[in-house]
Figure 1 (cartoon, rainbow, N blue to C red):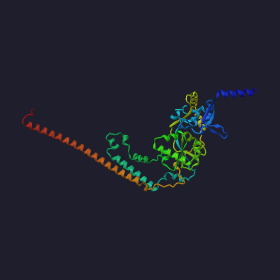
Figure 2: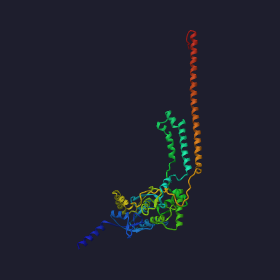
Figure 3: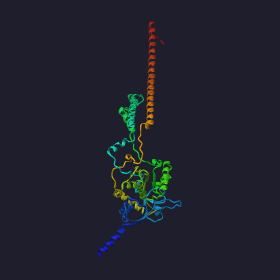
Figure 4: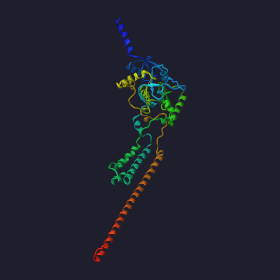
Length: 434
């Protein structure tokens, strides 16, 4: 009897302590999803429990779309129609904030490109070492080295002899000693070498827009899709056209992150790319089977939060509890626990992959003919300009010297005339009187 009393007391105490709320969401790992037993697990159920809320989950099919008649679908519709006390995480945008009240920012996100990794094929050491030199043939590399030496030498000669360069200006005290050393022999070659340094390459939105061999997938009715749809940028418009074209070709609805990721995993390498928010992309790239990678790093452009009915008193209370969870480090702790990587720490570099079914053409000497011609013309023009500047400088110096000589001669003539006049006056017996 005593045990039963304590059990009832515990149940009543837990009901008093935990507020019962209805929560609308789209299932999305690691925030909230179902385990093998059909129970809702993830970061959000644990966070809500720590905040003192007992949440009943209502699954939504989409995040929220504003229909022509002014009504909302998905999570937004559940909150507005009072089918749920709150919903999220939702991207905070102006058109949504007009109809609901948002909590403090839950996460900061931005769109990224997600693609499938190529098959993991082990290559011999010799082949791996030769990868950086594959883009060009041996003759092209030799010509490139020769062009480097010639260009560096010409740059140094021009800097050394040109009277209007830093070296001569420093000699005339018109520039500092540091500026004088801008193009020494060593610095000239270092400048040319740095200009040739590879800066890297990754597929960017511009590349996706111009590449007809890659389809683009994106979550339906989300803010990222809306951003591309309403953008005035021509590249964004072409990307949106490709999104619609790809959606028609595959004839499949991708309403959730799970649908989009599963479809991406089923595709061949390099024929499909997904655009999604950085937080979801980071999670799926760190989960088994570890065959996805982010092409671009996430740039924070917006944030997510939880939506409440306009004027809801629950929103202020929830905000205070959420801020406490963030300030105490609870949210960060849960993020680390639920987003822990299951993949190798080694980063994937798409630059080092040679596609097996792709014909590779090495850059030869003939392919560099145009660039070499431009280089030769530039060197010749630079030499001509340098010679012209030297001639102009010499002429200017000669003119200044001639003017100085003329002034000296005229001064001497005036002095000689005065001496002659004094000599004549002395013969007459006195100085000239005025």
